[in-house]
Image (cartoon, rainbow, N blue to C red):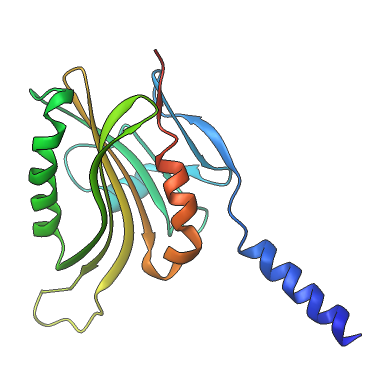
Length: 183
């Protein structure tokens, strides 16, 4: 009887930590990605809270519990696809400036489904530096990818709480490597 109970616990735990099933999501008419089946488009309130910048994402999705976010933002640029190697250092410096501490796992220009991307995979720490606060630093595991399409810089972001990094890292990479452009 104990053996059966132990086996049941192992099966339930395994199912709980199984990689999420992915489905194709069209981010725009030209761009698709594989996201977990249970991810939902962010509401206007979610967008206002999580993306207060003036540039609103073209597409933004979140996990049912709101802990994991994916977004695609687009901005005009005068740079071209062959400028990505040079731009990598610029965007790396921007990330280093944004976070209190950042530990890069990957920082490269690579090809994903026939298109060049700058890819940063990292763990970040953001301390609350308002002075009177005793809040602990926020730690996140993230993958951010940049590419240029026409005169548009596209920024793909996936943010996951650091405590979920080990169970999500493989899926996160699969998601970000699934970006496809229609030809």
